[in-house]
Image 1: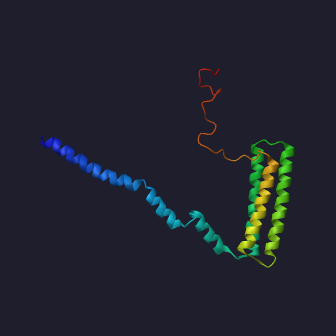
Image 2: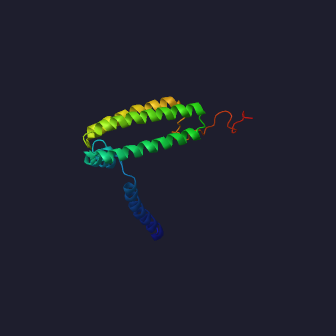
Amino acid sequence: MTARTTLRSLALALSVSFVVPATALAAPGKADRAEQADDRGARGERGERREKMEKAFPMEAAKFKEHLERRITKTRERVVAKLDKSNAPADVKKAVIEKLDQGAAKIRAAADGAMKDGTVTIDEAKSVRAVAKEQKASVREAAKGHLKGKEHGKGHGKGKGKGRGNGPNDA
């Protein structure tokens, strides 16, 4: 063996010894992920959100009403925008917006019941949220597929199916 081959093998061994630990640090393994999950709590990041929500309550009624109205306004804007984007028929738009307004009235009524003593507790807020979820489902039912959001799934709409212009039988 010559000195040149000895130096090459020594240089290769040293470079590998630096690369392997660097790649181990770059991609955490399952053990590292388990430790990170333990740090976040049993429910992960939602545990932090729950703690933040619990700190916000009891909340003043005026502040709760402000949050509620902002949320209702934002939802209405989004629904109208999605209906316009999907070119829904006028009768469907009218029915969905009417259902949305009815749902908003029910949510406001539930919120008024929660705010009657001047403060809103976390349990009262959860009951208002349950009413809001029910109303959301009824609006979606009234829309019947006209409120399309993001399409989910890897490569959605990109395939090699018939009629795509990339096969021998496609005209």
